[in-house]
Length: 533
Image (cartoon, rainbow, N blue to C red):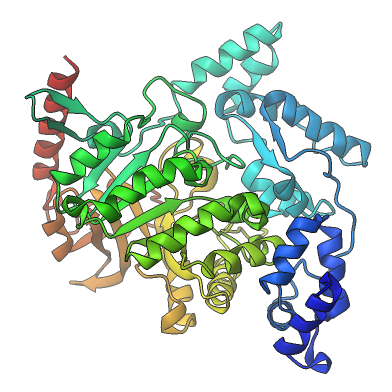
Protein backbone atom coordinates (compact mmCIF):
# COMPACT_ATOMS: atom_id res chain seq x y z
CA UNK A 1 0.00 0.00 0.00
CA UNK A 2 1.39 3.41 -0.92
CA UNK A 3 2.05 6.13 1.66
CA UNK A 4 -0.81 8.20 0.26
CA UNK A 5 -3.31 5.35 0.45
CA UNK A 6 -2.10 4.47 3.93
CA UNK A 7 -2.59 8.07 5.07
CA UNK A 8 -6.11 8.10 3.58
CA UNK A 9 -6.89 4.87 5.41
CA UNK A 10 -5.80 6.45 8.71
CA UNK A 11 -8.05 9.44 8.15
CA UNK A 12 -11.16 7.52 7.20
CA UNK A 13 -10.89 5.11 10.10
CA UNK A 14 -10.34 7.94 12.60
CA UNK A 15 -13.35 10.20 11.91
CA UNK A 16 -15.62 11.29 9.09
CA UNK A 17 -13.98 13.91 6.88
CA UNK A 18 -16.69 16.53 7.41
CA UNK A 19 -15.99 16.72 11.14
CA UNK A 20 -12.27 17.40 10.78
CA UNK A 21 -10.69 20.79 11.37
CA UNK A 22 -7.31 19.29 10.46
CA UNK A 23 -8.11 17.27 7.34
CA UNK A 24 -6.15 14.78 5.27
CA UNK A 25 -4.48 17.43 3.16
CA UNK A 26 -3.45 19.40 6.27
CA UNK A 27 -1.82 16.33 7.78
CA UNK A 28 0.18 15.80 4.60
CA UNK A 29 1.14 19.48 4.47
CA UNK A 30 2.36 19.60 8.05
CA UNK A 31 4.51 16.50 7.51
CA UNK A 32 5.95 18.07 4.37
CA UNK A 33 6.63 21.30 6.26
CA UNK A 34 8.61 19.38 8.85
CA UNK A 35 10.73 17.85 6.11
CA UNK A 36 10.23 14.22 7.09
CA UNK A 37 12.16 11.76 4.95
CA UNK A 38 10.67 8.62 3.47
CA UNK A 39 11.69 6.54 6.48
CA UNK A 40 9.88 8.75 8.99
CA UNK A 41 6.85 9.16 6.72
CA UNK A 42 6.58 5.38 6.36
CA UNK A 43 6.76 4.89 10.14
CA UNK A 44 4.13 7.56 10.82
CA UNK A 45 1.73 6.14 8.23
CA UNK A 46 2.33 2.46 8.94
CA UNK A 47 1.92 2.85 12.70
CA UNK A 48 -0.94 5.36 12.52
CA UNK A 49 0.90 7.93 14.60
CA UNK A 50 -0.85 11.05 13.30
CA UNK A 51 -4.57 10.28 12.99
CA UNK A 52 -6.38 13.36 11.72
CA UNK A 53 -9.13 12.89 14.29
CA UNK A 54 -6.65 13.41 17.12
CA UNK A 55 -4.88 16.36 15.51
CA UNK A 56 -8.22 17.91 14.65
CA UNK A 57 -9.56 17.61 18.19
CA UNK A 58 -6.36 19.02 19.69
CA UNK A 59 -6.28 21.94 17.25
CA UNK A 60 -9.99 22.71 17.59
CA UNK A 61 -9.65 22.71 21.38
CA UNK A 62 -6.47 24.77 21.57
CA UNK A 63 -5.85 26.71 18.33
CA UNK A 64 -3.90 29.36 20.26
CA UNK A 65 -1.23 26.77 21.10
CA UNK A 66 -1.32 24.56 18.01
CA UNK A 67 1.26 24.46 15.25
CA UNK A 68 -0.62 21.96 13.08
CA UNK A 69 -1.95 24.47 10.53
CA UNK A 70 1.01 26.85 10.45
CA UNK A 71 2.64 27.33 7.07
CA UNK A 72 5.54 29.74 7.53
CA UNK A 73 8.87 28.32 6.43
CA UNK A 74 11.31 27.19 9.09
CA UNK A 75 14.49 29.25 9.48
CA UNK A 76 16.67 26.35 10.59
CA UNK A 77 17.00 23.45 8.18
CA UNK A 78 20.66 22.59 7.72
CA UNK A 79 21.97 21.27 11.06
CA UNK A 80 20.49 19.09 13.80
CA UNK A 81 22.39 20.87 16.61
CA UNK A 82 23.94 24.25 17.30
CA UNK A 83 26.27 24.12 20.28
CA UNK A 84 28.63 26.32 22.28
CA UNK A 85 29.67 29.89 21.63
CA UNK A 86 30.24 29.16 17.95
CA UNK A 87 26.82 27.54 17.65
CA UNK A 88 25.17 30.50 19.34
CA UNK A 89 26.88 32.88 16.93
CA UNK A 90 25.83 30.72 13.99
CA UNK A 91 22.21 30.85 15.15
CA UNK A 92 22.41 34.63 15.50
CA UNK A 93 23.86 34.91 11.99
CA UNK A 94 20.94 32.93 10.55
CA UNK A 95 18.51 35.15 12.43
CA UNK A 96 20.24 38.30 11.20
CA UNK A 97 20.09 37.00 7.65
CA UNK A 98 16.32 36.79 8.09
CA UNK A 99 16.02 40.29 9.55
CA UNK A 100 15.93 39.29 13.23
CA UNK A 101 18.38 40.91 15.68
CA UNK A 102 17.90 39.63 19.23
CA UNK A 103 20.40 42.19 20.60
CA UNK A 104 22.45 42.18 23.84
CA UNK A 105 24.87 39.70 22.24
CA UNK A 106 27.78 40.34 24.62
CA UNK A 107 25.60 39.82 27.65
CA UNK A 108 24.11 36.67 26.19
CA UNK A 109 27.57 35.32 25.37
CA UNK A 110 28.62 35.69 29.01
CA UNK A 111 25.78 33.36 29.95
CA UNK A 112 26.82 30.92 27.23
CA UNK A 113 30.38 30.79 28.59
CA UNK A 114 29.13 30.22 32.14
CA UNK A 115 26.34 27.72 31.48
CA UNK A 116 26.80 26.59 27.83
CA UNK A 117 24.44 26.72 24.83
CA UNK A 118 22.88 23.93 22.83
CA UNK A 119 19.76 24.02 20.67
CA UNK A 120 18.33 21.55 18.20
CA UNK A 121 16.76 22.36 14.87
CA UNK A 122 13.41 21.26 16.32
CA UNK A 123 13.84 23.59 19.30
CA UNK A 124 14.73 26.61 17.18
CA UNK A 125 11.89 25.99 14.75
CA UNK A 126 9.45 25.72 17.68
CA UNK A 127 10.01 29.40 18.48
CA UNK A 128 7.61 32.00 17.12
CA UNK A 129 10.19 34.34 15.59
CA UNK A 130 7.48 36.91 14.82
CA UNK A 131 7.20 37.51 18.57
CA UNK A 132 10.28 35.84 20.02
CA UNK A 133 10.75 38.04 23.17
CA UNK A 134 7.56 36.63 24.72
CA UNK A 135 8.00 33.11 23.37
CA UNK A 136 8.43 30.55 26.17
CA UNK A 137 10.82 28.31 24.22
CA UNK A 138 13.00 31.32 23.37
CA UNK A 139 13.22 32.08 27.09
CA UNK A 140 13.90 28.40 27.75
CA UNK A 141 16.98 28.01 25.54
CA UNK A 142 18.31 31.54 24.86
CA UNK A 143 20.22 33.58 27.46
CA UNK A 144 18.37 36.76 28.39
CA UNK A 145 19.61 40.22 29.45
CA UNK A 146 19.46 40.65 33.20
CA UNK A 147 20.11 37.05 34.08
CA UNK A 148 23.65 37.65 35.35
CA UNK A 149 24.30 40.63 37.63
CA UNK A 150 25.33 43.95 36.08
CA UNK A 151 28.77 44.13 37.73
CA UNK A 152 29.87 40.77 36.30
CA UNK A 153 28.31 41.60 32.95
CA UNK A 154 30.19 44.91 32.68
CA UNK A 155 33.44 43.24 33.69
CA UNK A 156 32.92 40.67 30.92
CA UNK A 157 31.94 43.20 28.28
CA UNK A 158 34.85 45.47 29.18
CA UNK A 159 37.50 42.75 29.04
CA UNK A 160 40.29 43.43 26.53
CA UNK A 161 40.20 40.07 24.74
CA UNK A 162 38.48 36.71 24.51
CA UNK A 163 40.83 35.08 27.03
CA UNK A 164 40.04 37.72 29.64
CA UNK A 165 36.32 37.33 28.97
CA UNK A 166 36.50 33.59 29.47
CA UNK A 167 38.29 34.09 32.79
CA UNK A 168 35.46 36.32 34.00
CA UNK A 169 33.04 33.52 33.13
CA UNK A 170 35.19 30.91 34.89
CA UNK A 171 35.38 33.04 38.05
CA UNK A 172 31.62 33.52 38.03
CA UNK A 173 30.99 29.77 37.84
CA UNK A 174 32.02 29.52 41.50
CA UNK A 175 28.90 31.52 42.42
CA UNK A 176 26.34 29.44 40.54
CA UNK A 177 25.58 26.92 43.32
CA UNK A 178 25.50 23.85 41.07
CA UNK A 179 24.75 21.36 43.86
CA UNK A 180 21.85 22.95 45.73
CA UNK A 181 20.25 20.97 48.54
CA UNK A 182 23.57 19.39 49.62
CA UNK A 183 23.45 16.89 46.76
CA UNK A 184 27.03 15.77 47.35
CA UNK A 185 25.83 14.20 50.60
CA UNK A 186 23.56 11.89 48.62
CA UNK A 187 26.35 9.76 47.14
CA UNK A 188 25.91 6.12 48.24
CA UNK A 189 28.58 3.59 49.19
CA UNK A 190 28.92 -0.01 50.34
CA UNK A 191 31.58 -2.43 51.61
CA UNK A 192 32.08 -5.23 49.09
CA UNK A 193 32.68 -8.94 49.80
CA UNK A 194 36.44 -8.33 49.99
CA UNK A 195 35.91 -5.72 52.70
CA UNK A 196 36.75 -2.86 50.37
CA UNK A 197 34.64 0.27 50.51
CA UNK A 198 33.14 1.19 47.14
CA UNK A 199 31.88 4.68 46.40
CA UNK A 200 29.24 5.22 43.67
CA UNK A 201 30.50 8.39 42.02
CA UNK A 202 27.59 8.64 39.60
CA UNK A 203 24.64 7.98 41.84
CA UNK A 204 22.43 9.61 44.44
CA UNK A 205 20.32 7.75 46.99
CA UNK A 206 18.50 10.31 49.11
CA UNK A 207 15.06 8.71 49.36
CA UNK A 208 14.70 4.97 50.13
CA UNK A 209 12.66 3.84 47.13
CA UNK A 210 14.44 5.71 44.32
CA UNK A 211 18.08 5.78 43.26
CA UNK A 212 19.35 8.35 40.76
CA UNK A 213 21.92 7.27 38.18
CA UNK A 214 24.04 9.76 36.23
CA UNK A 215 25.42 7.41 33.63
CA UNK A 216 28.58 8.21 31.67
CA UNK A 217 26.54 8.19 28.43
CA UNK A 218 23.94 10.72 29.61
CA UNK A 219 26.17 13.70 30.29
CA UNK A 220 24.73 15.75 27.47
CA UNK A 221 21.36 17.21 26.48
CA UNK A 222 19.37 17.71 23.31
CA UNK A 223 19.00 21.40 24.16
CA UNK A 224 20.22 23.22 27.25
CA UNK A 225 17.60 24.86 29.48
CA UNK A 226 18.69 28.30 30.65
CA UNK A 227 17.43 27.50 34.17
CA UNK A 228 19.26 24.13 34.28
CA UNK A 229 19.27 22.54 37.75
CA UNK A 230 22.20 20.30 36.83
CA UNK A 231 24.59 22.62 35.03
CA UNK A 232 27.53 20.97 36.83
CA UNK A 233 26.83 17.91 34.68
CA UNK A 234 26.43 19.51 31.27
CA UNK A 235 29.43 21.81 31.57
CA UNK A 236 31.64 19.07 33.04
CA UNK A 237 32.50 20.39 36.51
CA UNK A 238 35.14 18.41 38.40
CA UNK A 239 32.59 17.37 41.05
CA UNK A 240 29.95 16.19 38.59
CA UNK A 241 28.21 12.86 39.15
CA UNK A 242 29.19 10.19 36.62
CA UNK A 243 28.50 6.44 36.84
CA UNK A 244 30.86 4.26 34.84
CA UNK A 245 30.46 0.81 36.38
CA UNK A 246 27.00 -0.74 35.93
CA UNK A 247 27.88 -3.93 37.81
CA UNK A 248 28.76 -1.81 40.83
CA UNK A 249 25.30 -0.26 40.79
CA UNK A 250 23.65 -3.70 40.63
CA UNK A 251 25.76 -4.85 43.58
CA UNK A 252 24.62 -1.84 45.59
CA UNK A 253 20.99 -2.59 44.67
CA UNK A 254 21.33 -6.18 45.90
CA UNK A 255 22.27 -4.78 49.29
CA UNK A 256 19.36 -2.32 49.32
CA UNK A 257 16.04 -4.14 48.86
CA UNK A 258 14.15 -0.94 49.71
CA UNK A 259 14.99 0.44 46.24
CA UNK A 260 12.11 -0.11 43.83
CA UNK A 261 13.03 2.51 41.21
CA UNK A 262 16.17 3.56 39.39
CA UNK A 263 16.01 6.96 37.75
CA UNK A 264 18.42 7.44 34.85
CA UNK A 265 19.18 11.11 34.48
CA UNK A 266 22.03 13.40 33.47
CA UNK A 267 22.28 15.54 31.40
CA UNK A 268 19.50 13.71 29.62
CA UNK A 269 18.64 10.05 30.12
CA UNK A 270 17.42 9.88 26.53
CA UNK A 271 21.04 10.04 25.38
CA UNK A 272 21.74 6.52 26.65
CA UNK A 273 22.30 4.06 23.77
CA UNK A 274 20.22 0.92 23.77
CA UNK A 275 23.26 -1.32 24.33
CA UNK A 276 24.02 0.54 27.56
CA UNK A 277 20.40 0.60 28.78
CA UNK A 278 20.18 -3.14 28.14
CA UNK A 279 23.09 -3.67 30.54
CA UNK A 280 21.14 -1.85 33.24
CA UNK A 281 17.80 -3.51 32.56
CA UNK A 282 18.41 -7.19 31.76
CA UNK A 283 19.85 -8.10 35.20
CA UNK A 284 16.68 -6.65 36.75
CA UNK A 285 14.73 -9.17 34.67
CA UNK A 286 17.08 -12.15 34.92
CA UNK A 287 18.61 -11.93 38.42
CA UNK A 288 16.25 -12.99 41.28
CA UNK A 289 18.32 -10.92 43.74
CA UNK A 290 17.18 -7.78 41.90
CA UNK A 291 13.50 -8.67 41.86
CA UNK A 292 12.71 -5.73 44.16
CA UNK A 293 13.54 -3.19 41.42
CA UNK A 294 10.23 -2.77 39.61
CA UNK A 295 10.54 0.54 37.75
CA UNK A 296 13.09 2.20 35.49
CA UNK A 297 12.55 5.92 35.07
CA UNK A 298 14.13 7.69 32.11
CA UNK A 299 14.41 11.44 32.75
CA UNK A 300 14.53 13.06 29.32
CA UNK A 301 13.40 16.15 27.40
CA UNK A 302 13.73 14.41 24.03
CA UNK A 303 10.00 14.84 23.37
CA UNK A 304 10.39 18.62 23.64
CA UNK A 305 13.77 19.06 21.98
CA UNK A 306 14.31 16.18 19.51
CA UNK A 307 11.22 13.97 19.19
CA UNK A 308 12.19 12.97 15.65
CA UNK A 309 14.78 10.57 17.06
CA UNK A 310 11.94 8.26 18.13
CA UNK A 311 10.55 8.24 14.56
CA UNK A 312 13.43 6.33 12.98
CA UNK A 313 14.32 2.72 12.25
CA UNK A 314 17.48 3.27 14.29
CA UNK A 315 15.29 3.65 17.40
CA UNK A 316 13.53 0.32 16.90
CA UNK A 317 16.00 -1.75 19.00
CA UNK A 318 15.19 0.63 21.89
CA UNK A 319 11.47 0.04 21.35
CA UNK A 320 12.14 -3.72 21.37
CA UNK A 321 13.86 -3.35 24.73
CA UNK A 322 10.83 -1.43 26.03
CA UNK A 323 8.66 -4.34 24.84
CA UNK A 324 10.89 -6.77 26.73
CA UNK A 325 10.58 -4.71 29.90
CA UNK A 326 6.78 -4.56 29.61
CA UNK A 327 6.57 -8.31 28.96
CA UNK A 328 8.61 -8.99 32.10
CA UNK A 329 6.82 -6.66 34.50
CA UNK A 330 9.40 -3.85 34.61
CA UNK A 331 7.79 -0.48 34.06
CA UNK A 332 9.58 1.99 31.79
CA UNK A 333 8.47 5.39 33.05
CA UNK A 334 9.44 8.10 30.57
CA UNK A 335 9.73 11.21 32.75
CA UNK A 336 9.07 14.01 30.27
CA UNK A 337 9.28 17.67 31.05
CA UNK A 338 6.57 19.78 29.42
CA UNK A 339 6.05 23.36 30.61
CA UNK A 340 3.77 24.75 27.90
CA UNK A 341 1.10 23.38 25.53
CA UNK A 342 3.14 24.60 22.57
CA UNK A 343 5.80 21.96 23.29
CA UNK A 344 3.28 19.18 22.61
CA UNK A 345 1.16 20.50 19.77
CA UNK A 346 3.40 19.70 16.84
CA UNK A 347 3.39 16.55 14.67
CA UNK A 348 6.81 15.27 15.73
CA UNK A 349 6.04 15.24 19.45
CA UNK A 350 2.55 13.80 18.99
CA UNK A 351 3.87 10.99 16.76
CA UNK A 352 6.77 10.23 19.11
CA UNK A 353 4.47 10.04 22.15
CA UNK A 354 2.12 7.64 20.37
CA UNK A 355 4.98 5.44 19.15
CA UNK A 356 6.40 5.11 22.66
CA UNK A 357 2.98 4.35 24.11
CA UNK A 358 2.48 1.61 21.52
CA UNK A 359 5.45 -0.15 23.13
CA UNK A 360 4.24 0.00 26.71
CA UNK A 361 6.04 3.18 27.76
CA UNK A 362 4.26 5.13 30.48
CA UNK A 363 4.92 8.82 29.84
CA UNK A 364 4.61 11.28 32.70
CA UNK A 365 5.39 14.99 32.79
CA UNK A 366 7.00 16.81 35.70
CA UNK A 367 7.89 20.47 35.31
CA UNK A 368 9.02 23.52 37.26
CA UNK A 369 6.94 26.69 37.35
CA UNK A 370 9.44 29.21 35.94
CA UNK A 371 9.03 32.95 35.49
CA UNK A 372 9.12 34.06 31.81
CA UNK A 373 8.45 30.48 30.61
CA UNK A 374 5.40 29.08 32.37
CA UNK A 375 4.76 31.85 34.90
CA UNK A 376 3.91 35.32 33.63
CA UNK A 377 3.79 38.90 34.90
CA UNK A 378 1.22 41.58 34.09
CA UNK A 379 2.06 45.06 32.81
CA UNK A 380 2.58 46.30 36.36
CA UNK A 381 5.17 43.60 37.01
CA UNK A 382 2.95 41.54 39.31
CA UNK A 383 2.38 37.81 38.89
CA UNK A 384 -0.53 37.22 36.53
CA UNK A 385 -2.26 34.39 38.35
CA UNK A 386 -4.99 33.85 35.76
CA UNK A 387 -2.72 33.75 32.70
CA UNK A 388 -0.08 31.63 34.44
CA UNK A 389 -2.56 29.09 35.75
CA UNK A 390 -4.36 28.88 32.41
CA UNK A 391 -1.09 27.80 30.76
CA UNK A 392 -0.95 24.83 33.11
CA UNK A 393 -4.66 24.06 32.92
CA UNK A 394 -4.43 23.85 29.14
CA UNK A 395 -1.24 21.79 29.38
CA UNK A 396 -2.78 19.35 31.86
CA UNK A 397 -5.86 18.84 29.71
CA UNK A 398 -3.77 18.22 26.59
CA UNK A 399 -1.63 15.73 28.51
CA UNK A 400 -4.83 13.94 29.47
CA UNK A 401 -6.02 13.87 25.84
CA UNK A 402 -2.67 12.27 24.95
CA UNK A 403 -2.90 9.72 27.81
CA UNK A 404 0.21 11.26 29.43
CA UNK A 405 0.28 11.50 33.22
CA UNK A 406 0.71 14.89 34.91
CA UNK A 407 3.16 13.82 37.59
CA UNK A 408 4.10 17.02 39.41
CA UNK A 409 4.98 20.72 39.43
CA UNK A 410 7.72 22.29 41.48
CA UNK A 411 9.27 25.64 42.33
CA UNK A 412 12.54 26.95 40.96
CA UNK A 413 15.48 25.49 42.84
CA UNK A 414 18.04 27.97 44.24
CA UNK A 415 20.72 27.26 41.66
CA UNK A 416 21.97 29.14 38.61
CA UNK A 417 20.18 32.45 38.02
CA UNK A 418 17.39 31.69 40.49
CA UNK A 419 16.40 35.34 40.85
CA UNK A 420 15.33 35.52 37.19
CA UNK A 421 13.02 32.51 37.27
CA UNK A 422 11.55 32.53 40.73
CA UNK A 423 8.44 34.18 42.16
CA UNK A 424 7.04 34.50 45.68
CA UNK A 425 5.80 31.22 47.12
CA UNK A 426 2.50 32.92 47.93
CA UNK A 427 1.89 33.70 44.25
CA UNK A 428 2.94 30.24 43.11
CA UNK A 429 0.56 28.78 45.67
CA UNK A 430 -2.30 30.87 44.27
CA UNK A 431 -1.52 29.69 40.75
CA UNK A 432 -1.36 26.05 41.79
CA UNK A 433 -4.62 26.27 43.74
CA UNK A 434 -6.42 27.65 40.68
CA UNK A 435 -4.94 24.87 38.52
CA UNK A 436 -5.92 22.16 40.98
CA UNK A 437 -9.52 23.25 41.45
CA UNK A 438 -10.03 23.87 37.71
CA UNK A 439 -9.07 20.38 36.55
CA UNK A 440 -10.93 17.11 36.65
CA UNK A 441 -9.35 14.85 39.25
CA UNK A 442 -7.79 12.50 36.67
CA UNK A 443 -5.90 15.40 35.05
CA UNK A 444 -4.56 17.02 38.22
CA UNK A 445 -0.89 16.83 39.24
CA UNK A 446 -0.25 13.81 41.43
CA UNK A 447 0.92 15.99 44.32
CA UNK A 448 0.97 19.61 45.40
CA UNK A 449 3.61 22.04 44.19
CA UNK A 450 6.89 21.48 46.01
CA UNK A 451 10.43 22.78 46.34
CA UNK A 452 13.52 20.63 46.77
CA UNK A 453 15.68 21.44 49.78
CA UNK A 454 18.28 19.45 51.67
CA UNK A 455 15.60 18.02 53.95
CA UNK A 456 13.54 16.71 51.03
CA UNK A 457 10.69 17.83 48.81
CA UNK A 458 8.47 20.19 50.79
CA UNK A 459 5.02 20.86 49.35
CA UNK A 460 2.71 23.85 49.83
CA UNK A 461 -0.69 22.38 50.72
CA UNK A 462 -2.38 25.76 51.00
CA UNK A 463 -3.01 28.41 53.64
CA UNK A 464 -4.86 28.44 56.93
CA UNK A 465 -5.62 30.80 59.81
CA UNK A 466 -4.51 29.83 63.32
CA UNK A 467 -5.42 32.09 66.24
CA UNK A 468 -6.16 34.85 63.76
CA UNK A 469 -2.81 34.58 61.95
CA UNK A 470 -2.54 33.49 58.33
CA UNK A 471 -0.03 30.70 57.65
CA UNK A 472 1.24 28.26 55.07
CA UNK A 473 0.44 24.57 55.51
CA UNK A 474 3.43 22.50 54.36
CA UNK A 475 4.12 18.78 54.09
CA UNK A 476 7.00 16.66 52.84
CA UNK A 477 6.37 14.52 49.77
CA UNK A 478 9.90 13.06 50.07
CA UNK A 479 12.28 13.40 53.02
CA UNK A 480 15.67 12.33 54.35
CA UNK A 481 13.67 10.73 57.15
CA UNK A 482 10.51 9.40 55.49
CA UNK A 483 8.58 9.61 58.79
CA UNK A 484 8.70 13.40 58.45
CA UNK A 485 6.14 12.99 55.67
CA UNK A 486 3.44 12.15 58.23
CA UNK A 487 3.29 15.66 59.72
CA UNK A 488 1.77 18.90 58.45
CA UNK A 489 3.98 21.93 59.14
CA UNK A 490 2.75 25.47 59.74
CA UNK A 491 4.86 28.46 58.64
CA UNK A 492 4.15 32.18 58.84
CA UNK A 493 2.58 33.57 55.68
CA UNK A 494 5.02 35.67 53.66
CA UNK A 495 4.03 37.58 50.52
CA UNK A 496 7.60 37.94 49.22
CA UNK A 497 9.68 34.89 50.22
CA UNK A 498 10.62 32.60 47.31
CA UNK A 499 12.62 29.92 49.16
CA UNK A 500 10.64 27.44 51.17
CA UNK A 501 13.43 26.70 53.65
CA UNK A 502 13.60 30.43 54.49
CA UNK A 503 10.05 30.49 55.88
CA UNK A 504 9.57 31.04 59.62
CA UNK A 505 7.76 28.52 61.84
CA UNK A 506 4.37 29.77 62.99
CA UNK A 507 4.46 29.01 66.71
CA UNK A 508 7.86 27.47 67.47
CA UNK A 509 11.49 28.57 67.40
CA UNK A 510 12.37 26.05 64.72
CA UNK A 511 10.73 23.45 62.51
CA UNK A 512 10.41 20.02 64.12
CA UNK A 513 12.89 18.40 61.72
CA UNK A 514 15.72 20.96 61.91
CA UNK A 515 17.83 19.39 64.67
CA UNK A 516 17.56 15.90 63.21
CA UNK A 517 18.39 17.25 59.74
CA UNK A 518 21.56 18.90 61.05
CA UNK A 519 22.62 15.61 62.63
CA UNK A 520 21.85 13.65 59.45
CA UNK A 521 23.83 16.14 57.35
CA UNK A 522 26.74 16.10 59.79
CA UNK A 523 26.85 12.29 59.83
CA UNK A 524 26.74 12.15 56.03
CA UNK A 525 29.44 14.80 55.72
CA UNK A 526 31.68 12.96 58.19
CA UNK A 527 31.17 9.66 56.40
CA UNK A 528 31.87 11.32 53.04
CA UNK A 529 35.06 12.89 54.37
CA UNK A 530 36.25 9.57 55.78
CA UNK A 531 35.59 7.78 52.51
CA UNK A 532 37.37 10.46 50.52
CA UNK A 533 40.23 10.47 52.99
